[in-house]
Image (cartoon, rainbow, N blue to C red; front, side, top):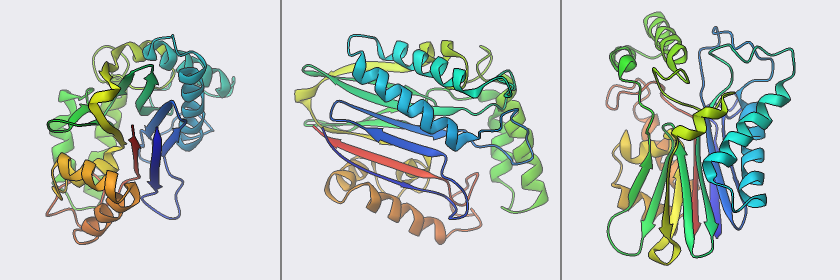
Length: 273
């Protein structure tokens, strides 16, 4: 694989909670599950620490154990990362650091892939339209609250209160069987990832995007998925993120394009096969 990638924090004074890593055989993109600063996580490490360690463990598992299923590699990586927390962290806290996961691995003549959560993997085929994989752990019980958040003005007390209520509701349900599954401290979550295999010869390449970068198509409507993968392949991930940022700046109050944050951490990767 020939890989280009870009990552951009939503604020220059805040550590990015997205993480991307790639080797010639595998790629991993993680989008940390951010929460209101007032919500206690029971962990002193934080989300940036978590995504970097989970990402490193996962890419190592994928490359060191090519015959092991990707879901098993993710389960192992979750367990490895949980062991690093130490006794001072409350891993049973529903707000413990967590992340969405996208990964792909070349194995012989095939590309294997995995997606857990609302980050996306996009297959760029030689024939036909792009195939978008991911955003597979929606939480219908929280949709009404999320729409309420989007209907309020960013920076107001009303939005902060609704966002806190939404964050608590999601975290109380996730990894319980009654809500979304996400990579946190429960290896079982890996079993709920969307997986598949596609012939390498059928693809130009493969892309991975956190939801902050996927806004190009699914929130801001700057182009179709065909436009997005063409831009990634020809101009690179940094240009896609730059176009997202430029659009966001024209709508700082989130009126034209309702969304939870005016800006979000953004990560994008394109691997040419």
